[in-house]
Each structure stands twice: as structure tokens, then as C-alpha cells.
Image (tube, rainbow, N blue to C red; front, side):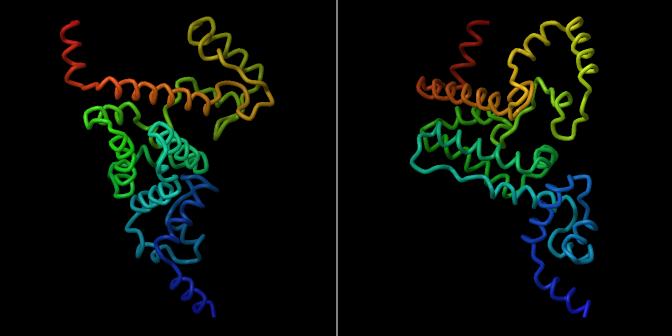
Amino acid sequence: MTQQIDGQRRVRLNRNRVLQAAVSLADEAGLDELSMRRLGQELGVVPMALYKHVANKEELLDGMVEAIISEIDPAVGGADWKNAVRLRVLSARAVLQRHRWARQVLESRTNQTPAVLGYMDSFIAMFLAAGFSVDLTHHVMHAMGSRIWGFTQELFDDSAGRGGGDAVEVAPEVQAAMFEQIAARYPNILQVATAARHDEGSVVGRGCDDQFEFEFALDLLLDGFERLHRQGWTSRQAKKQQRNEG
């Protein structure tokens, strides 16, 4: 009877089910707990059964990236390019917030898979369709960087002091001592890093509002892109001007 049930499970197993189970496992337990053995247990199959659908763990991780990219909203048709890009980026950010492990995996990928290349291609298409030159679009993509995936490297990360993510909760007296040391050694950093504070009852807690800071920088970039587009900016002209000024 057990063999019959196992056989039925194997028949129903497919690549999509494997990837969705892997995503769910990473969501619930974290990447450290993701292994072919653990995934097989979650699916009720022996680990070897998974290799019919993914060749190895690296291919599994590539497939998980593919799965989360499919959750990002497509470009909004008919919208102005700034709004379309903004909505796409914020959708990607929402996906990464649902799947906290995804940023680590995206940063670790050495192979550009069809899903990744397809997303990048569709992102570039939004600027080209708006009339941006290929030259300007090239530099736009450099400026956007990881923002197209919905994340950036935060400069002021105080998550350790407010229990964010996997951070360790720091006692108030210990945190106060840390601030005193920073204030004595690096007063300018402390002044700027703590410039924007939030109420204790805020959703984001004390410290920087990461969503606000992300959108603030995104809007600055989009406004800058729009200005350069209207000016007919080219990298050749910009480099020539730099040489003349030098």
C-alpha cells in the first residue's frame, strides 16, 4: 500500500511542483534548511526522484529565482514610462519582501538564466518604448542596478537594534552604550544616520523607513532619467564635456 501511494506521488511530481515546494521551504525555514533531502521529505519522495526535474542544487536555486520572477507584475500597458517602471520595481520589491531569501540567491547567481535575461530584457523594453536612446538606456540600467529587482544595499542598517530579520535583539542599555561610542568617534555618521526617526509604534519601528528610502532614491533616479531624455543626452557629449572641463 505504501509503495502504491509513493508511486502515485511520483507520478504527480513535476518541475513546477518541485520549485514551488522549494520556495515554500525556503520561506518557512530559510535557505540553510534547504537541501535535496529535506525537499524530498517535504514532497514525500526520495531525494533521487528530484534529480529528474533539477540536476543539482544550483539548478534548483535557478529555478526558484525563475518562480519568484513570475510573481513580479508585468509592465503596465498604456501607462507613462515613469509610472510603469516605478510600479514594476515596487512589485519586484514586494516579491522579495515575501521571499526574504531571494535577495541572497539573486546576488549569488553566476549564470544568467532565461528567466533572468527575460526580465532584464522586458525592463529595458520599457525605456526603449518610451523613446530612450540605446545609449541612455545602457547608462540607465547601470544606475538602476539591483533596484530593478527591488533591493539596494542599505547604507544605514540598524536592524540589529530593532530585531529585524534574523538580527539579535540588543538590550536598550547596550544599544545606548553603542551609540555613545559611535557619537564620540563618528559624530557626522551618527547625526545623519539618526536624522529620520519613527515612533515606537510605527510599522517599521525605530530607525530608517526602508520602503520610504527606497522609493525616495527610485524617484530621484526616474526624475533624472526624464531630464536627460528630454535633453537628448548622449554619453559621447557628456564625455566630451568632461574632457573640456578637465
